[in-house]
Amino acid sequence: MKVRNFCIISHIDHGKSTLADRFLEVTKTVSQKEMQDQYLDDMDLERERGITIKLRPVRMEYNEHILNMIDTPGHVDFSYEVSRSLAAVEGAVLLVDATKGIQAQTLANLDLARERGEDFKIIPVINKIDLDSAMVEETKEEMIEALGVKEDEIIKISGKKGINIEEVLGAIIERIPSPKENSLSSKESDSFRALVFDSEYNQYKGVVAHVRVIDGEISGKDKIYFFASKTSGEAKEIGFFSPKWNPQKKMKAGDIGYIATGIKEIDVVRSGDTICKRDEDTSPLPGYEDPRPMVFSSFYPKNPDDYGSFKDALYEIKLTDPAFTFEPEFKEVFGRGFRCGFLGSLHSEIISERLRRDYELSLIISAPSVTFKVVKNNDKEEEIKSASDWPDESGIKEKREPWVRLEIITPEESLGKVTEVLGELNGKYIDTRYLSLSRVLVVYDAPLRKVIVSFHDNLKSATKGYASAGYKLQGFYEEDLVKMEILIAYSVDEAFSTIVSKKEAYEEGKKTALKLKESIPPQQFAVAIQARIGGKIIARETIKARRKDVTGDLYGGDVTRKRKLLEKQKKGKKKMEKEGKVNIPQETYFKVFRK
Image 1 (cartoon, rainbow, N blue to C red):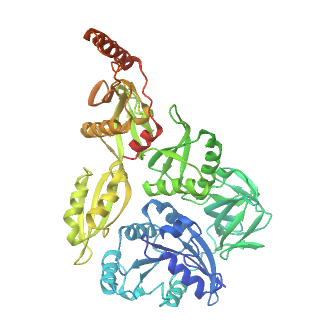
Image 2 (image 1 turned 45 degrees about the vertical axis):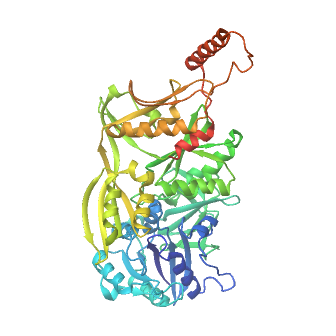
Image 3 (image 1 turned 90 degrees about the horizontal axis):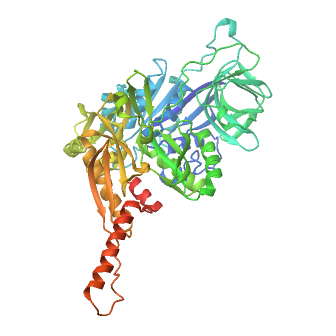
């Protein structure tokens, strides 16, 4: 049978999982008895939120064709998952919700798809045409205008009611090309190569690589080799996703399936890597890159005894999410933890929720920050992931921070409020384009550190949830950045140190000092909270001392007795103010980190 490999891409909540359900039903891949909504979304978190977090492959048979489908996430934070899916297929179904029209991530996913070249086929589909609120004609015009597709290429469907699902399957067969037979030179024509686009861990089978076979074929028990990690292994079991594991004797070029390696070291199998046979002389597939997280947070277990299980949990999550990174970190107040890297704030939120639910861990999580770059006086460039790594100012020649290009799609009547929200980012306006009479695309460049904090919440509030935004990294640009230290009782608490723009330093320092004043319980002495840049104090708050009535036990007598006791108390408080140590509860760190 002929093979077609494709994925489904769209903005979040436009109906990808529902369309995937209909495909499974029409092709009879899953029986009616087993079928349930969001069949391929097997995480409780995915079902509760109604979003796809992990890509899911499945093999279907329809009209004498094999259809290998990959269902992908829709949020901007999981665009790396989408890019890996696109690399494993020859075409994509681009889905747009008729009740919402084109959204920001629709455009972002389209850009990723077009990067695959002219041979990569895109099938535009309008979903939810059965709803009363559906704007079918307006959405069609938007797709023609914004996506550059032809009217006769657009298919109108209802994933929920199953309208025109077979028309989409027919278009996949007709428009998406078969996999190329070979991409190697004649000398290497029989060599096996497969692209790893995902992986998971099984306690019995070890690391299981999800692969697209590009060249040659592989059989069970063949010896294999991973180029990126330079590791050898064995194909303990191979097979297809139907959608559960379906063992096979062989896989050949064009197939999408799995290879159970038996390898127990989780970091050996990396997404984007190339697998070949150990005894064959061949070259890796082009384009392998390690994902580069741009948002970082510190994770610490509330119970120090959970450190070991916490570390194991991070390794397991890393296997299924290659964009997630972590490295050990120690802070005196928290003990041992990890500095974790993410693609965005939702990515961070999902990982923390998985750790809490799946591994029953209670964590303290710092506020998100971004990667900065400094060029030292010797012209050496250095990445800075934490304020504690910030070098001495005298040795810095240039400072840079990441900027992103925001694409916001909003109703025309909310354009003024969107402009106000963007103004708070201190970025740069690029363009405004009307997608239709009622919907506008705004393009704006801004510092990533501003975007990850509260931009999406502010945008949703300003537009009552009708606007959407996506972003992609533009590069690192020069900015006058400084390290802001927080002193509590005249001692620096490194946990609260941050990197800020110099022109915003006073506002940030005042905000943090005030937050600490409200969060730290009163002590027996007055506590000074100061924000400092270099040797200069830029903001200060004071927590008043908790007062004890030392004269309460006196009954009458000379007033000088009371004065002596009060003077003694005053001297004691001054001594404590100089030498005393403030006990900061963990809850205070948590409140300030979540500012």
